[in-house]
Image (tube, one colour):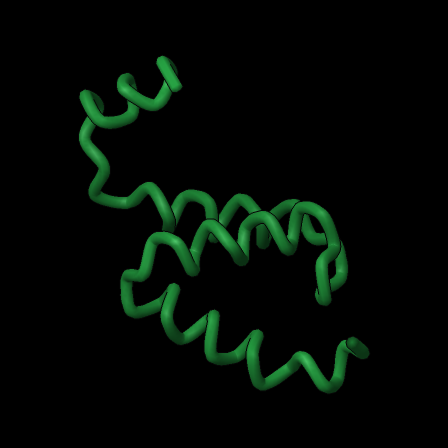
Amino acid sequence: MELESFRPELLKLKRKAQAGDKAAAMDLARRYLNGNFVKIDEEEAKKWALKAFEGTSDEELDDLTYL
């Protein structure tokens, strides 16, 4: 799939992430980290990863370390 044909899907994903969809935000973080249909951008990856974990309690984050 070419980047231009993926653009509408990427915009939809960004809207979902901005609305608080944690899975969408993490998907964007991975895409920017790995360059999947976007240019690799570590700062953008970090921004979306932090968005994905907004509102997550310390206890929930601790639980992730055991997975």
